[in-house]
Image (tube, rainbow, N blue to C red):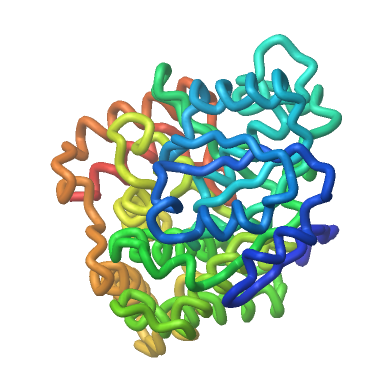
Amino acid sequence: MISNFTFYNPTRIVFGSGSIPRLNKLIPKKAKVMLLYGGGSIMKNGIYDQVVTALKKREVLEFGGIEPNPDYDTLMKAVKQVKKKQVDYLLAVGGGSVIDGTKFVSVAAAYQGDDPWEIVAGDGLKKVKKAVPFGTVLTLPATGSEMNHNAVISRRSTQEKLSFGSDLVFPQFSILDPETTYSLPQKQIRNGIVDAYVHVLEQYLTYPVGQILQDRQAEALLLSLIEVAPKAMQFPPDYNARANFMWTATNALNHLINRGVPEDWATHDIGHELTALYGLAHAETLAAVLPWLMWYKRKEKQAKLLQYGYRVFGIKTQKYSERIDKTIEATAAFFHSLGMPTTLTAYGIDPDEAAERVGSRIDARGWQLGEHHDITGKDVAAILRLSQ
């Protein structure tokens, strides 16, 4: 049965080549703006110059150095500057990590509690009543953070990686210019495709509830990623391929395809622990977990695995067990076609050690993962032991 739901998404999307100059009209003229970015690649590819030119009539402060998997301690330095300088508008220029970090800064700067980490790890969201408004210029399609209310924050000092969500952190606007992706390394394109693909599966590969539209939309996104991936990976870049990739990744996690349906997210929860403990890129953890979770939960996910295999990969084998095997193999093969490994051993990580460490963490937090809330630390350990 389809669950009752509401749908709300206030983010304005400005899509296409040459869109960055529109910042001049999107950000209030009298705003004091903080520009947040990552390692400085925007200085080399011309994006920084475009942004600064568009904002030239405003007072602009800068905060760079936001890491992949943005770190709490780094972000708190930005929070301190926002408060000290009385910044009233934030602009994230980067990929999901920069945008997620900016979301945290936007709420932490207005937080009334004692410890802003509570926003991520405790009940601090209940104390959040307002946030500093912000917009984004997306440079790396992957997370969908440019059009959703979620953020994932790391705390390296405690080896934690946790998420939060609030309607206060929807971007007011996001500029999506496919040409901003032209200077990306092929590995980052690969990671973005895998990330978006798994986002869709987390919302789709559960159990049927009769939500026909959401199923078909999810399948369209999966088929689009499979179709566009080879050209999106090519250099020199193909504009249409990058444009389709960018828009598909945004739609993979903008709260539309999960309306009225159950969701999983166990692969992400396990993956976050692997990133926190071993430093793997987010998409790398997803690819190293997903095929094995699919295999481990094949009975519970049977109906959707069969549907997924038939509708996305055209697998028509009559024997259910064989069709499921082929579906899991086809998923892994797609990742492999991008050059993405699907085992922990490929990264020199002992699956038995990872199983023990991650499984213990899941149990210590009292988490029960998956759409049925039936994946305990013991199950997580069993899944990770398969990843070799």
